[in-house]
Length: 488
Image (tube, rainbow, N blue to C red; front, side):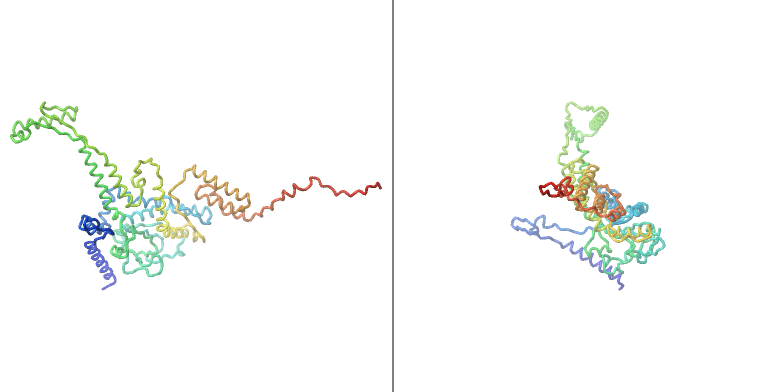
């Protein structure tokens, strides 16, 4: 039996074990009262509660159907992916400004952030995706060697979701490092838009998984994760059921009843009497639609009933909050308004969400972006990145112009006071001012050359002894000789 067949057999065994566990799973509560039948395992309704596997991530057609037809599912997939890539990065290393601008323009020209956003988006939808670095003149099945990249060779990224590539499950990475145990190659399927039937080395891809799974579940998914919609599925169905049910109630919001004396007898007899009744009803409908007029017999009774929708909005909000919790996105981001209205003014949830996005950027995006920066530097600048190169993701929470001006004024005043008090020298003051530009946007034009010139300047002279000068006589003149008291 080949190694591939062994892995497939192990995956089938895992599926069988999970199916058995799903059928036999039962949880026990820490508190039980068998007399009152309180707690799980006490023969009450909760005793039949359990958690099963959905495996909806394996149904690609179902994932695409819900993504296309449900705006809420689309927002759940797209929001975080867009927020992770929409602001880009800022370079904090010692590089000439023109080189920083050239790197930034290359990111825009090659649509790097759009490709990274698509990679994140399809990984969240399908459970996995890769972005292939397209380097002209190099074979994709060979390991990536940065020192072989020449000017103009990097052409951008090609995003392929998990259904467009087949990972080498029998050939895994054995070198120590963060990629150990992951597939060494990815073979592009025949239905892909490019690189058809070609093998791609893992060093040339930026791999992303939707929601990472435990080891045995990952084996059952061919090494990939699961879609973010799989956890959301039951909450999404519940929310859509509530909103659709509420929409159906609109048709019953204005109910009307029409009482006819001896209606059963008229229906039983049929004939002209029943035809006259039906003709009367049609006339009522006609004039009610055109003129709002109701024509009926004096003995008949016509009534209208209003349906109350009070409380339904609270129910919808509660189900919406559960959806927000499932995708870790606040109401204002996912639905476009907070529970208290779009002008509620509560920014706490948005700040928490942006902090969560920043954490995902540092843990998931940073390694791939670091490699891309080195590749683009060799392709655009013709040289590797300088020693100590660093970058930060641009914060999603942006300060207003007034807040930036206030912070800049306070920072500048503090630096100037520290310099005047000779606590810091001029080069340090310039460095502090330039560092504050990351927040305020001011003093960003202080270059490394300005700092070097300040370091080359002679130190300032020592301060004068003002006290000694004030204690001395104003015009001391020559020292007078003592007189003997006699004229010579």
